[in-house]
Image 1: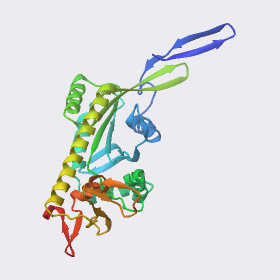
Image 2: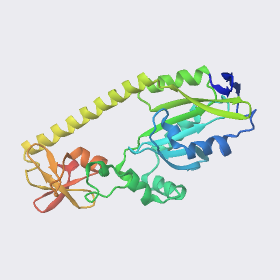
Image 3: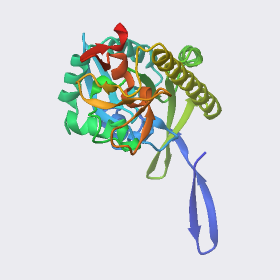
Image 4: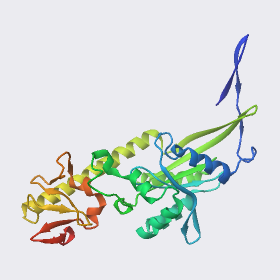
Length: 297
């Protein structure tokens, strides 16, 4: 409940807000709700304060489909936001759009971003460059190809029917990244208030999910490290060999503990962290004067 504090010479008292809604206040989904989210993108990560990068609104993704708001988080996660100014079902649309984006070719996705992102693709890639955090800005050039096609669904509506709620709850339990936000509109005299409440996942379950995902990431890194150790032990990789990215640029050297040391010597990072999904796309090592994809070793 929201109260307005009214102060006077005699003291102060409270005046409770009256519940209203978007329709009654002549507020609209596109011109109002979506414009607020674009102005305050941290709403997409509520209650966190991190600000995703808004690609655009009413983004055409082909086959007659339009995403209400498309954004990219700083870890490369694509955000599909569907908004409603009532309790209509936004989940089915969001799932359909997510399926379309997950199967979209990289070139098609890149062209779509170029058309909608007003600051240009280079500016977006610079903001998304994960190497900034580990001091490798000059060692590796980012591209959209680096990022796994991780997609988060964010729903905005005044209310949800039980079917939508339980379906979203089940999808979250299966590891699908979904945030369900319920908003409300209140009025006190001439003042109108817009309030957010994240109903799924709960704060506790979200923390549990993050811990689970972190554990999976650590397990994946461990498997990758074991694989490199095995390659070295079997002489498929040799200590001191150069390691290249997919563009043929040297990014480091093999060490006996399966760690790649960057040539500058200022950082020592796990190879999987350094070259990310570009390794899965065919990062290469130099052997006997030839470049050989890891997948062929």
